[in-house]
Image 1 (cartoon, protein in one colour):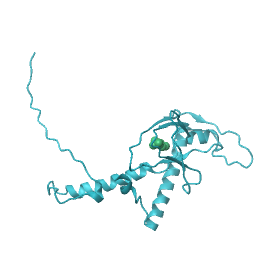
Image 2: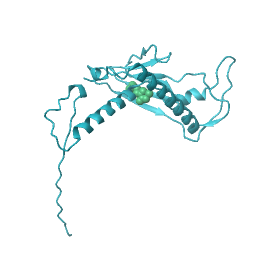
Image 3: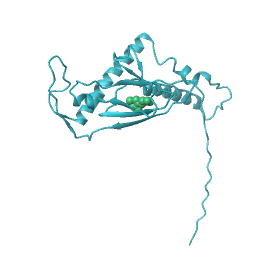
Image 4: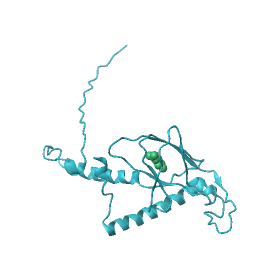
Amino acid sequence: MKVKVVRDSREIVTYFSYLVSARDYSPWPDKPEGWRAVTKAYSEQLMQLGCKLLERHTDLGTISLLLQDQVGGLQATRDGDKTWITVQPVDRAFVVNLGDHGHYLSNGRFKNADHQAAVNSNYSRLSIATFQNPAPGAILYPLKIREGENPVMDEPITFSEMYKRKMNKDLELAKLKDELEKATHKSCEGLEEILA
Ligand SMILES: O=C(O)CCC(=O)C(=O)O
Ligand SMILES: [Fe+2]
């Protein structure tokens, strides 16, 4: 057997970053040029992404099963963010969330759970989520609704179509929220303190 000897030398840079507010740039090298600025911009973007991931949302599928540890942090709202109910952790119990597909399946009768996860600065938290989603081509038929109820569909649609509608609605809401935040200069303030 022929063995070819190849050189395998690598240089690895491991880079741990502090929170932007706690960062001291003075010992940082000047090279590569632009590194500080790029890192700063990257950190800011990452912080925004962190804010987005913690934001309130509904899950897409039929149901979601959540197993959160005793630290807790799961919250739900029924009034579009005005008040929040803390979902207390129950040992060995799953939290069952109705998702958007469940909402559509019932033609709007059952509400999809509007929820978020709040972090706690003292403890790490673990929550295991499993999502049940139908196949993209699965068809949803509009159920008959009672008088006074608002239907969410009046003709059969596929799950993909439902997904598109949900995404468009979420995007519209996100845009409105962004505009509102810009107008009131409110942002994801406070998150740095929570993460510190
Ligand atoms: O962290 C949690 O308990 C909730 C997670 C969640 O809502 C999700 O992954 O969709
Ligand atoms: Fe969720």
